[in-house]
Image 1 (cartoon, rainbow, N blue to C red):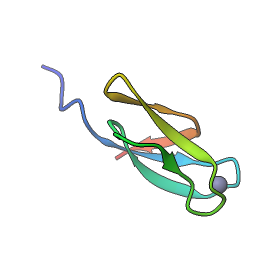
Image 2: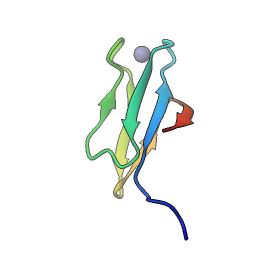
Image 3: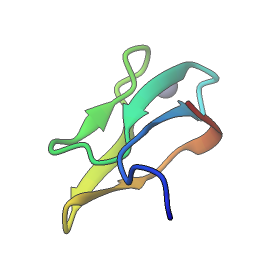
Length: 56
Ligand SMILES: [Zn+2]
């Protein structure tokens, strides 16, 4: 069986800041340091725009 389909990702922005993003984020997630969009909701699953460092 697969594990839970929702999880947190650690995403690195192009500015170098790292942030936790919910993989099923329901709203746009922006970098707290520079305001760059890190994730956008699409079809119930977030599209990650930054670099995924690891899954939490
Ligand atoms: Zn940033």
